[in-house]
Image 1 (cartoon, helix red, strand yellow):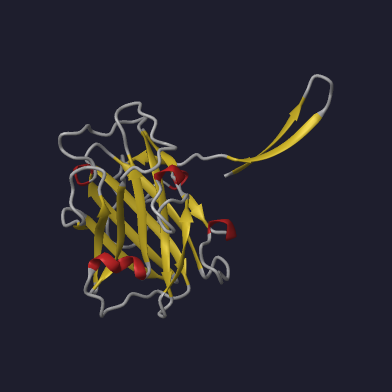
Image 2: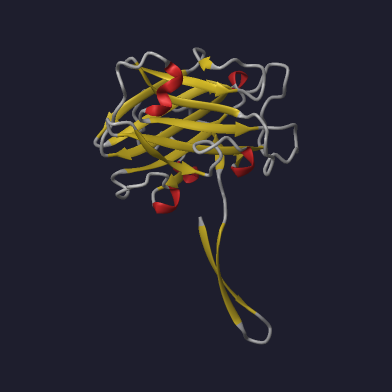
Length: 239
């Protein structure tokens, strides 16, 4: 978000300042969202929605504006699960039905996101060269899946079966919804997330209009061009 401030000093001088501030948060899921591929009004906590909808978020060379590709995302949590929804405005929805390797869902319309967690009260922002959890949502052979490309813990790369995921197309928007147990992200012998936890976070939405991956819209960085967790922003778990 851009915050505009006017600062008036004791001598009467006023200085105007505009700066970027990050309020990325995941709210507690008091009411559990239904994972059905349709993001209904009031189902997710829109107060914590994040947006990527102008040129500053675009990694598409010939991006034509919001209707080409833009998105909003809402993240929620409880002690057992991470809940994740993305509503992407996309003029052309495409996935390759002939692709059998689930690893390559990133080549089509899809989601990728990264989480970097630490011990309680550990500062995770600004850390580079660290392996992080990189997960995504997409369509593989007609099925909505969650895929893991890398793990900060002991989990292996591949499709995550122990989850709920649905992807639907409604009035020009692609709705992505996911519910994944924390134990698929943080290993059993590690801690349980609690309110106040701050995790490194980045995400992107890929765009393919049927002729190959055009690029992506990203919120923070460190995933699409190269893997670098020092380019992540952060997300705070609030309750």
